[in-house]
Length: 292
Length: 317
Image 1 (cartoon, one colour):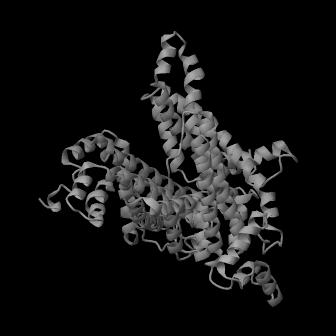
Image 2 (cartoon, chains in turn purple, red):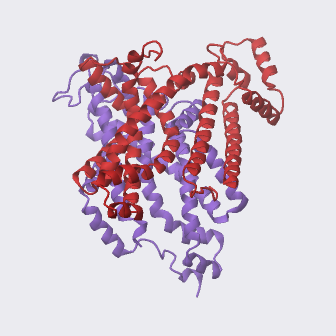
Image 3 (cartoon, chains in turn brown, purple):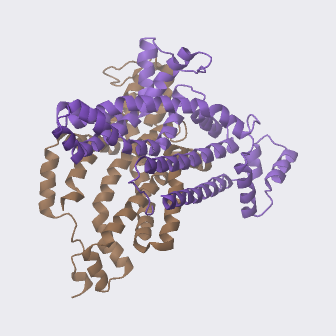
């Protein structure tokens, strides 16, 4: 028998468990609704050029701070730009920042956690002490510090948010690796001569994937809010690029005369993060590791 | 117990050293001459030389770090580029405002979270549980800066009940202070309440299933007495830990909340420092925030193990 014959994905989600999970998810309509709303935002982000016909950047001095109407369902802003178009284009920025920052956190955090948990010893101690120090910086303060060094922009805000979220993935991966590495199928593969890279890549990583995916659904809404906060503070997306955070920043000055400027971007952030959280709950049910 | 304390303190000291290295390196990663960065763009050649001499910027980097760390340990974090005040003096002036805001928000969060969490656990799988869980989910999903803007819109612009912004010292006018702090504290407390509510509910459900609760019921104690005298007290221990872990989230929340409500605290200080490129202040604030977080969690862990001697946290990270 060779190592390759071993069921490398022995504990990966089996079909019966998936079916049971789906049934549980369908019993939670809120999760389904959350998932559908997330998909709607994905469609908005991808289809922004076709869905929002008005130019989200060009000022129109004849349309300054118009209340919601048939022509402008979300009203217009202080420069006469269509709020609907800006909210739709803003979804692209939010999704981009939310997803890419967490992908960065996973790309940095998972290998470090994997190595720390697998090799343990001095390497583990060094990585974990660095992680402890990293975790001591409050998420937003760390992001602000990094943006100060790198300069304000969407890319830098995404990197700052990603690096801020990284220690969570290091800790989570390390913990998962510690428990998975002790499983019989990993020990069996090791006894049959599998090397470290193969054990980590083929046997451990696929089995901790579902927990990492669930964590990602928790992290993405936090990252979306963080991007909005950085842009709101002027440290993320720079005007005139439409972003929900910069829209709320502008809205602050016109709360009395044009309150609709504050409603829509805020509602968009709220509904997207709430939907992610609801969908994440459903995903947790679907992939519940306790259900082996 | 002693071993746990020594280990926990040692880990905290190592963490603090790593934090100081990160903060020190951070400012040196800013492109350009560090003396120019510290002195600001207006500084002349003499000013730059003074900065270089004071911070030994011509020395090797490890020597520079040790000198900087030594000064920081004595409370010298340099001077603000903008105001020329010592960073520590500026922080000492702003910190009490943020501490007051944080304390009020913790009080509001506890006042919401504990009754709601207990109710959700006691009336598990009823409409009360559903309402509390839904509110908790909304609490973690709502962006606090938008909630702040909506509160201003409603309570200040529409109803005119509360001032939209500003700050009055508590000692100057207690009622004026509370009128201005109630909205920011509520905004800051909402997310915390959501997290604490979930924790209280889960912890309470665990406690309600314990043997001693069954014993209390079997002795004939009334339901209310069991819940108030036995269950709540024991279910709240993990809440203390969560509060410690949330200290960082409170600091992050304070940054944006103080910005919206124009509260001149620690959070607003860092944003102003970033925009004016006042690097010594940014460096000082980040260092103090991260160090405080480590110390708060050290205190929480120590108090946790003192509160319940059966608990021996530790065993590595």
